[in-house]
Figure 1: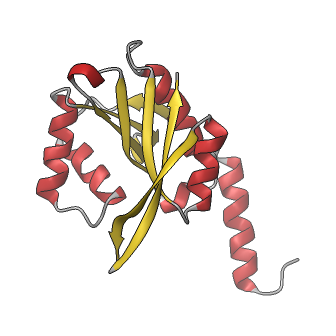
Figure 2 (figure 1 turned 45 degrees about the horizontal axis):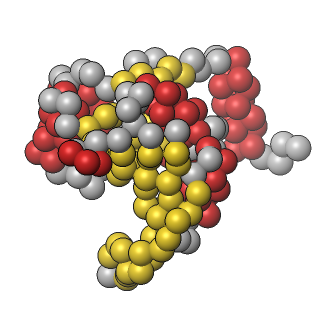
Length: 173
């Protein structure tokens, strides 16, 4: 029901969005140029530019695995798997998963995780992660993908001056 001009504009925008079907693509992050750095920094505005450059270089150098979702060539989501070494080289740890605010609640995180897990080397048999114990949306996403809680790390993160517990979760491939 249209109540005012703002509602009408929202309705028109929704209609335009529905008419222009955005194609979302998923890929491993391999590009390390300034455009890629700028796009990732938009997802992580609190990161310093030097930090973003270092993290993109680490992916390029094979120190971790990074995957992105894109719309019209723009990065809208990102996931990072940190490699383990030596006797733990069969394990990776998810250290970040983020979707641009504009694209949340569309199943993109689920699709990006599913796609990226299929791209990991065959020797990877365990994927671990830590998630804020109060972040129900993230916990539900990980459970839906198949992750299981195996522990809790008390006071794992310091967020805005308060300690937050993390659930430790794992998925065996």
